[in-house]
Amino acid sequence: MQRPTSKSRARAFAPDPDAPSQTCDHPGCEEAAGYRAPRARSALRSYYWFCLDHVRQYNARWDYYKGMTPGQIEAQMRADTSWQRPSWKLGNMGGHVSLDDLTDPLEILRQHGRRTAETRAAKLAPAHLQDALARLDLSWPATFEEVKARYRLLARKHHPDTNTGNAKAAERFKAIGAAYRTLRDHFTTNGPT
Image (cartoon, rainbow, N blue to C red; front, side):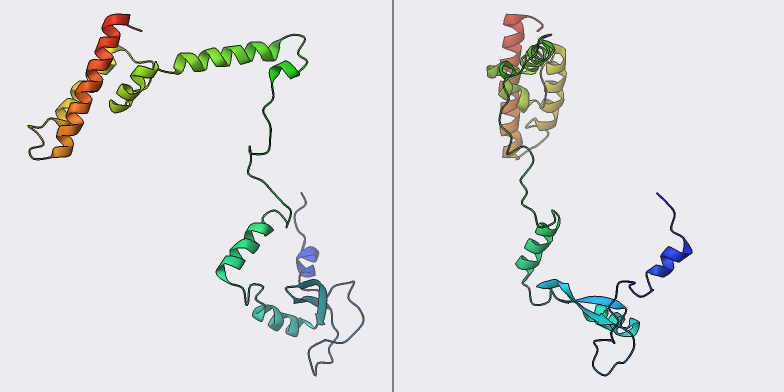
């Protein structure tokens, strides 16, 4: 990208080279009209032609959103973000692609798909443990040592003796105890994994 030169910076204040040879559209002004300004919000491609002083005055007073409600302004701004073209939320318009429909002679996609599904299945806790893990703020896979450490920490924090008169803490303490027993029974029956 080229760095702007003094000529290109000066162009911002120079009259439009494609301006018609006419006088300023401001009433009573006889200056040459070299600067265009839109006539109205509904006619953005129809222009007034002004001299530099009057285009500055016109632009200072120009309010594209004048007369619109806040809801209309927001709708206009949202439409302008996509150049007045229809758009959709990402991910909502595509369909599900089946790997069976693709030609994959080396079975690269199929192997990756299996590996991903196996990995996802390994990361999910057994259904009967998910609530207990959530109550102890643990993720799967977890070891019994992690479960014990987390139980001790939460039991101390929510124990009725340290939260005298707090019914919510007592309920939380009971829920933590039930979650711990569920996980302990699972690890006792099934071993470390």
